[in-house]
Image (cartoon, rainbow, N blue to C red):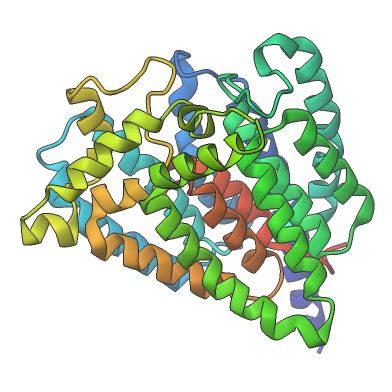
Length: 373
């Protein structure tokens, strides 16, 4: 009996230490990621995050594998291998980003809820400092998208903090996260945060829960069709606003990517090959297509519409898999369900499929434990 008690105590101590160490490491890495720019020679080190997580768990004797995550990692690797054999460095970079996220999802690590809350406070003051430092670059107008090199990752992660705080009813971190989100003012992130906060509020009423469940299922499907016809949607919104003497061009609504989206949509409509339609052009094909045809503006080097991007790169097989996964995860209780809905909103006008730090940070919040301290 005493031996069993000692073993349980040892397991609990490892569990707590694992959570503290991993959370500290992940938050340090995210902070570093936001300050290491693309042209920095040491930037490649951020891709080693999953390996570092494995190392920490091995040292702490707490390494466990998530079989579902490992299965999807294997399927993705098998799916992409034929395309990578005839691809260049840019295609492999996209594969590496997504693989990093899947490797992290294959590890059942635990993070510290207490440390995550502390980081929310740090982020709040950091966002204020960043605005003061580069106020002219970021801007505050709803018509002017932010353009800082690192603001996308920073701005997309902050609402995740708010969603996690709201799901766990932590009011002060929630307020700070909302304020930080408005300070940074990433429009699609704010939209996603507002939608999720409304759902969290509705879920507190038993009579409205069926409506909330239906919304969770429909939101990813509706957003996919909007993403598929995004240029028509941008044009319709622009025409509608003109009736109220508000003049915003479709290009402004799409953050300068209206023409790029049009080129991609036109290419999709001209496809006739069965294999190409079902399985796509391969990982990173969207980036290669835009670069080859000189469609990419120097300020907008990527197609920020992940629904179209997945359809081009992985075909209907890939997009159906993505939508199915989003619907399944969106119906889950707690943070992971809300985070999936938030992510499905971001797919509309962002490039988060290959933002591996976004997914690792999401996992850090999803795997925090209330009873850890």
